Image (tube, rainbow, N blue to C red):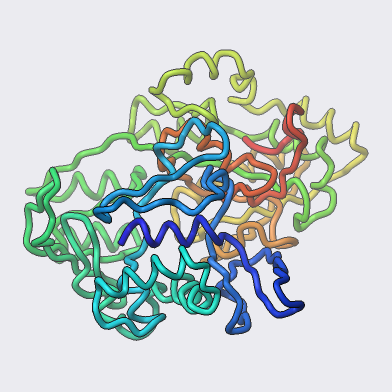
Length: 420
């Protein structure tokens, strides 16, 4: 089940169609997600991503005789080869919906055959469902799609909450403790705290702010635990295609970053809740991991901890720009993000910047959209400690988190103001 799903992805991350001329393949390059396009029925288009290392596997993976192993051969050495092979979607569920296979075993076999035989007709149908069939929005999903391999499997997905039930077939080390878990999405922090106080929920997990911490500590009979995780707050600047043309100038971007109140944000928004809070000083290494301290001490990031207003004004004079506007995209419903915006706005104004509000409830959908904003404020969670993980944010092409249009030839320094 796992192996067959990945085999298809390895073969076809991209779109091809046949029929222009006999035996000719035509690649279709698109910027937006493939599944948002209405491709002809004969197009094989897997809406996957490249650049994580699997693009180095160009031959079809071989499945073991027992069906419980898969062998991938890399065309060249890739240091994180152990980490890029992840659990995919269930092959038998895809086969049932795309190929009409009623029997799970026969369905998995049909997926394997389609990949190994390069059956473009079958792969076209498979790719369509693989792209969008698991987008669980609108009407209640088909129960056949509510499957999983972990200690819990989804039993129901309804507006505002998801119900998980213990998986009786799970044989791993993390056996479920509760028979049923209901996950509720409560976006408003005070509402989440109120739900805990009145017993509507048993556990809440919130990004901690001073107000949230005080409200939680005021509730009797609960235990409050806090700590650090791999999430960090970040400010990304649009290197190109921003809302204001003046921000294309690297001197203007550097001047703006020179006003950025990194230490003040930590002191006022994080330290009152976590006394050990510190600014993060490396994008490549996580705090506490090998290499972080050396990187932080040698990369020059310490000079950006506090604003240098005189330096910012000097850079703006050098650029010949007066009162440039910088419009920041962020989530208006997030109290911390709003506070960060206000601190940045106040600090930058002292150097002559006009920082304006580009916040939107749909901010995630606007990331990387040309002309919508000049900078973005959000939190990013590191998903792994792979050596090549930084590629997702900094690769000029294929970086899934590189929404700032940053592009630079190998061996050159990033443009001024590309990241803070």
